[in-house]
Image 1 (cartoon, rainbow, N blue to C red):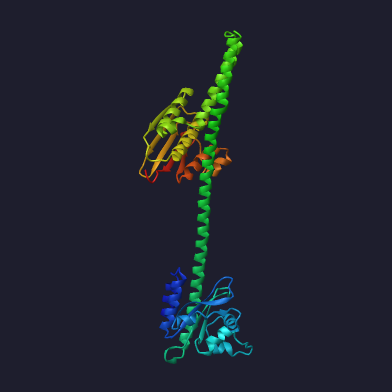
Image 2: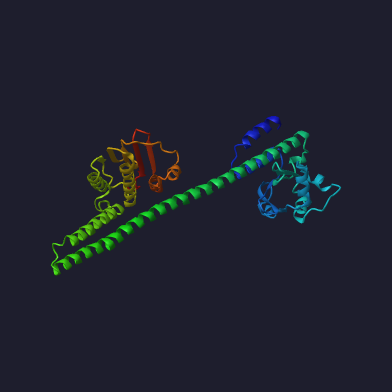
Length: 399
């Protein structure tokens, strides 16, 4: 074994990402160097002992008792020297302090002859490789000591890399957990907002709208009792109340589109677009809607309807367009909604949060709706070239 082995082993160790594989490699090298026994001790964070991790040549029931305190004087001298060393050399020093009973038990019966410290670059102990006698009690040549020294350094570096990978993996797992929680939070917020809308629509329908009907009915009775059927002032009050009722009903419908529950997404969009066309004759609205009846859950359909609703409202209010295309179609893995106009257009920011900073909370809300169902939103626009809003919502697994 020599320089070529060291180079090959260095490249080999660099590919390890599991401590078990690294330990087996280290023990295999010990066997190749004709050691009869070896134990890899591992030091874990916060622990004050070295525990057996992997071994060969020892009875398993005996190895279980081979835990060594980190404060053991021999271990401390090994860390201070930072090199592979014989037990005898570590014991017989001018400042010798007696070993702990655990280490002394290994020394007394000749179970351990040589110790290799596995140290980090800042001299923190990662573990210790304890080597027993060699076959035929062979002595180590200078080249063998160089190999052990290099092997300890290479293994230490590999252990550090494994710990770094494990730490990064833990951080990635934490980040994934945070992302999942953020995703769930977005979904729950969107669902909560939707439930609030539906509840508000119900309250409007069951409360103020019915109350207005009641007042108008009472006025009509009062006019008849008092023979004031031709009273223009009362008639004006009734008309004003009915106008308010109509506005509240439109608002209630915006909050809870009845066609969506009864007839589905296509009919709901078509009905809403027709009503919008009647109110805004200066804008031509064209729809190309393909059925998605069996592809989406009710909540996903409602999310797409809200995206359509917000998109077309933005066009009417801000785009100065005279033509709007609304398209809905299914693909193998998703349903796609497109709202496109030929209006003034603009330069969309690169991040959704920039929309909010510019006061465009509606677009941010559309993006969050899509993302809450693992979908996505695209906004494609340029000044003077109109705007295309495209939403992708994944189909249901059973669809």
